[in-house]
Length: 294
Image (tube, helix red, strand yellow):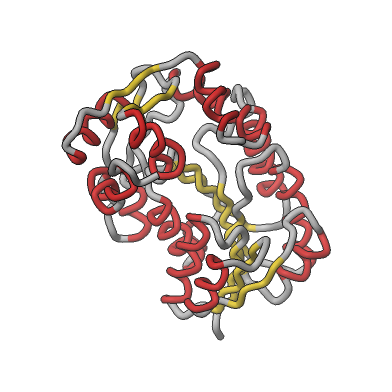
């Protein structure tokens, strides 16, 4: 019998990768999106059943979960993560869903400085104490972060401006996270009850990352370690939601203290294919960082 999987937040980076991977494996995939747009139309063309709904509506989530065997649960970074998780857990329970692959954070823990990270930790515990089988994915900073949130200063100022000091992380791509989630959902038995810290293979400081950009772009890119208030001002100019702004401000403390600093081979161990090297990811997206690309 064909396996049936619900993907929430399906228009997002990791979730869309899960949709594509599972459709290719022959699964029936229901893709839950907030609204119909070009991204949802792409999912439909891939072969997913696209449905719209509000992840904070128990009614919508109960309908979305009907007849689904398992799910990838991914909610945007927000201070409503615990509410969304509780709603989804109840919708999944009502429908007899057997397994959830939950997207969390590497810094989710009870004493994290970010309120959102603490809520992610509570959401993990909520799923753990529910009747549902669950696996938690806890990735480090995404490599995609450089395209989404750093590109403007690289293009306009030849700078990477962040309050991260000299600490390290091993950037992971959203596609690799999606491949892990798809592999877990395809054969969940060995993964039930586990939490996976997901990383790339290249442990880098922001000074080293600036050096890679300099080499690949053919111009000097420098890392500027700024006070948190200057970082906050940039996010305010770019109209970040208040809870997201607060999360980035507080998680920068975790970064400086080394809480993002992990490197492992779990992507390869779970999927059978190595994680994308950071240089390869930047090379594939190099046009986004060329002068005049904003």
